[in-house]
Image (cartoon, rainbow, N blue to C red; front, side, top):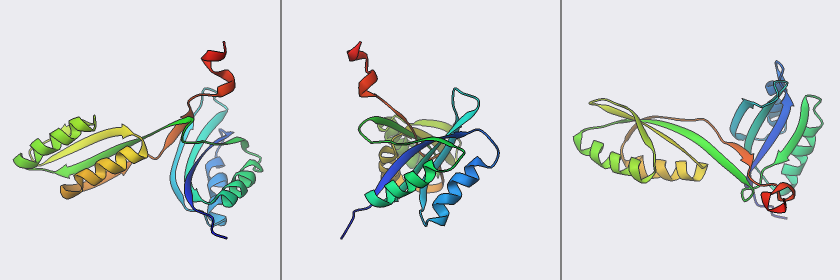
Length: 171
């Protein structure tokens, strides 16, 4: 039976100790999962870190990997982040070779996408853009005809936007 693949994003709360990232990520590699994006960040608790992992899987595989991740002793919790109830952001830096003509048209694109020109010289421009992965992909598609020298993306990070049980409307 065909099971469609889709990108999943999970948030893993782990002990803030050496080699924890290696232990969690090696689980994915051993199971044959390719990680699309990975970010690690501190939390408001100095004993915990948050690992945000984006990977592509079908429903059954996703449940398996979540269950296996939860079994690791360094893992405190695993949450599947749904696209409707969570906020996602990613940072993009891209360097482009420019000339007088391309500088003007790129400036217009930067304004439309609400990006920032963070460095500018006679020959190149570095643009910073923060947004959803889809927004960053669309931006890269629009500027693909320009002379892109380098692209650097941070990877997805996210947070649950609204827990229905704790919403302000319930107060």
